[in-house]
Length: 620
Image (cartoon, rainbow, N blue to C red; front, side, top):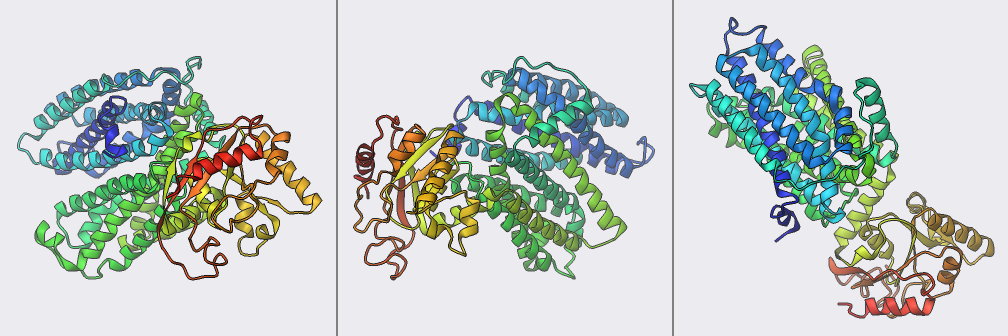
């Protein structure tokens, strides 16, 4: 069974997964039933104009995210997260009990106020929802867990929206809706009580409710780490795009000549696409946090968003029913584009959530996630303002609006790649290694999670560094000959990757050794190829004394590694000079294996060579 679905069998994940999915499902049942009932209610029944009511409902639901997210983050850091989830779900029962009564009596003002309470409940649920995952899952499971959460969330949104449509057209819609939302809230309580304890990250935290001051402080937590902030902004940009697309689906369906049920079909395509993309991202990344996949998601969003503009017919056929709409050949590419925008959206979002959770300090993780929720809310409000400005005031078409979103997405992708080169570098590494090889990782848990460490490995081909960089979950500082480092085309890549250049000249050797010492003393990972050159015969040559000199300056753990399956590749010296012969194989199997860390006192050149030979001995 795959790792993803194995998690669904474990108590540490399954009750949590069901609880959060039921929450998203119930929110959408209630919100959409209310909106549909208001849309079909007579003017005399409503306390205000229907359009004003619907927009007020949207505003009231999102307002609590600004008011309470920061405080909710503090609560989730101070107390047991499973306990908070249970309390929040009991609050949902109270809200939905009140909603059932208000629906029965069709008390629209009360229902509007309860929507604010639902937003409040969601604001308190958000930080604990994502802060609990890295506490109960290992780093190797975090991507799988996030993939399942995003899959469950968007499928719940879809199913909740569809069920709301059926309920709203029932003869006794108010009674059925009230019973349904209360029943699902009670199911959420039952699943929440099955969640195992999740101890507080910072139990000594002093709580205070000062909305403005807390919001500023919470946003400061997000800014403490540059990569975390960029992950949050990337997540918020995804919600900006998602809200922009979903809000315009009703009008876009009309533009395509569809009927009301066509809106649900477009929503289904988009939601299923995100679910598939989230699961696919987990598979592509090998269940690891892989920022390199983020640009792939962004490029896919841009490419299919651009194609959607050209695929939108200028004069579509008016369709009398859903079957005619779905089977219209002129709309096939429109449907494919929307599905694939969802797929690449899922690929885009999962690594960012995982990266944010992993990098956030344990004692402040929930507050970092609260900051993410605030940014998400701001970006969704901005998407609504942009939509109103461009579509209502300036009056551009829906297709042109989608094209603008695509251009903005491309600019954001370029900006983030320049601001945080790790995304671009990991993308390049991921693309190269996954295109040329089938890479398997073995025993890489031996690489320390924190602190300085020296990695050593046999040197088989010119692809070794890329394969090792893609395999290791921590950034690696490679030591490279200066002549290669200064190559005109690759120099920017090496410099951005913080490669340490070295040569045979005395001054350069001293500078390199000083830089290696600084890196190791600062808790970074440095990798050297002790042979000093590519192998000529596939075997491991004698290790040079550079490793001994490094350990004399910085006595850190040494992790032996080996590359298996690369001898004979185009980039090795098998059969002639590397890269100057015809390639004989493609997408071959390569294994990156690590051995247990060796204490510096024991890690002599001879001993470590034997360790690498031992790891290399079982090569395929």
